[in-house]
Image (cartoon, rainbow, N blue to C red; front, top):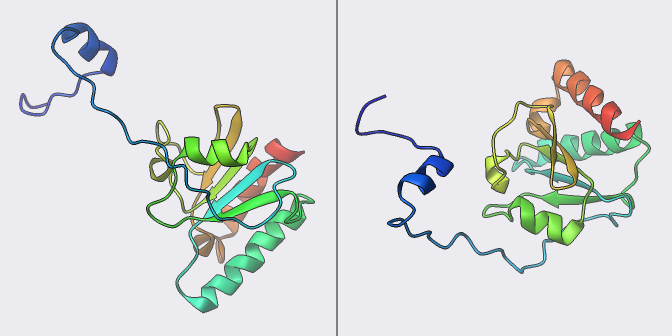
Length: 159
């Protein structure tokens, strides 16, 4: 660690500089309604980055459909959000969808202003929701290992 690049824990910073630091206002939550498909009856949010390639996009939709069928879910059960940058953060998503489960495909924890970074397929409990972050749907198309890892996590969530 060089002296010109020192990183301090937030607690330590607050203790050391309690009389001299001024907190900057954070990013204000957006009140904009997030567009989605589905009815969200079971409070399950799927968020993904849609491929720009139309031939891949069709395969990704088929994959999402297969994932839902494997868990006995329909579009009535879930909310499906196509991530478009700039995207809402985790709090905005949670406020609108009140989800219990989040499955994120190709949208990273940092994309959603999520505190911390996690390994793909790791189940994370946060603010009353169980979350799984996974590679993009396009990455799943020819990767049996990803499909097996996702299935293992989904079994823990839904069965």
